[in-house]
Length: 88
Image (cartoon, helix red, strand yellow):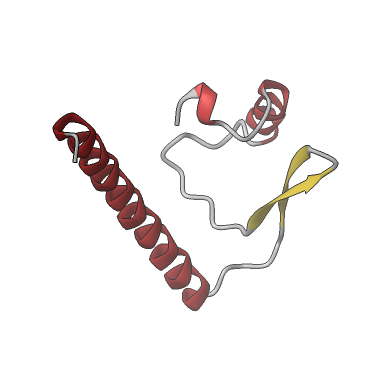
């Protein structure tokens, strides 16, 4: 994810990096979290609840669907550009 794609501010990223300094980029974090947006302020809220296998499975399925949707969007954009070039 590039800096421009981040949903967090530089300060929020700094706080997270300080809070979890002991973790490397390859560590798997097995904690539930969600993004809370209040009055355009974004906060990541973590929970001590351990994710179930079912929740992890659903999360993986959602990720796969998102990847497939992005592929479809790219194909549609290419098709649209081809139609514009061919003036169809």
